[in-house]
Length: 396
Image (cartoon, one colour):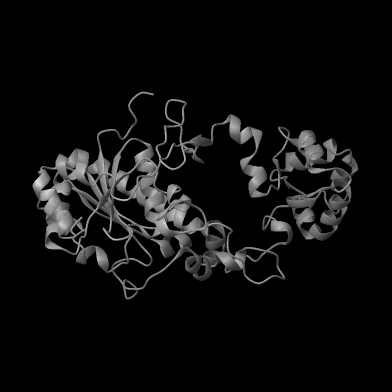
């Protein structure tokens, strides 16, 4: 395909695990050269996350967040490591990290530390709680943010314990926000010649994603609770219903979809029933409506209802992960790609959700630990003897 939008940009990232690598992977997929800095001993802890491994120390999990990147092993705590970082920063456009809030300054990853060698450098920071408050030194993970920001109180059945999302969605949202902030600062740096720090923290990202229930509460003191069947808090029917062989999610978000639903399931009289004639009436009688629609949907399997309703109103099967990934539609849209790896030539990964010029960008398997160290050091001016000394001394 033609040159990707970020071709020619170099991003250096001292990153590990999920949130930061997820964000920078978007940059790499869109064409940026992303140099992943990893500790010489062991590398990114994500390389050790099981249960599935391609080789000793090379996990399948690691492939999720590090496609299209280069790996540089570097000990940033050493003076020589800082010298290498500065030389890298001199020829780079941005430096990112997802370290604990108090560490970027100590590791020389801030704009103040790097502006002298590159005034246009953008420094993006993703921490658990931010770098400028009493929690800066606190470690933190996605699940904690789901708990503290109220996500778990909003998720699950009303009579169940608070429930987290099945995936680390706060990590993914925060990583994406960091990438957006980095790109915005990068655009400005291209115009002004001056970089800056950009900060995102997991808790702020999580709180921001409480969205309209937050605004309802802040203005009306209305605390949104959990609704049965993963239902929308204020619109019905917009929830799961039992089918003959599982579940189907039906969303009559607009009044017209309620009419379409009643017509297509052969029950137009429901639209005139006083209990269900208006959105407010349907919400007030959600229990009775659920029971009635369950009785209808349970007469046929999910596939029957998808065939009947799809394209006419919002509807989806409630799939297991295997069903979702084996979907013919997902295959046809190209969301699964191959990224050949030395240990598995047919390694399958998720393709980019962003299309460029109508096509999904190509993917390359995540790098082996330190696979690009010698090449990168050579590119920034170190000779073979210097590189050998760095390696002997544990700098790389």
